[in-house]
Length: 50
Image (cartoon, rainbow, N blue to C red):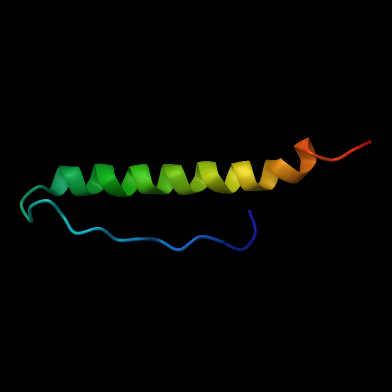
């Protein structure tokens, strides 16, 4: 895709020993950012008049 249009937001870990939760949280944030970018990219195409 082109230039990234979202900023990554870092949330504090629930506990420093819970590494798995941090990995899951980061992955979920990346998936959400990708989904939002795809929605924004598709919006103009779905609302054009032919």
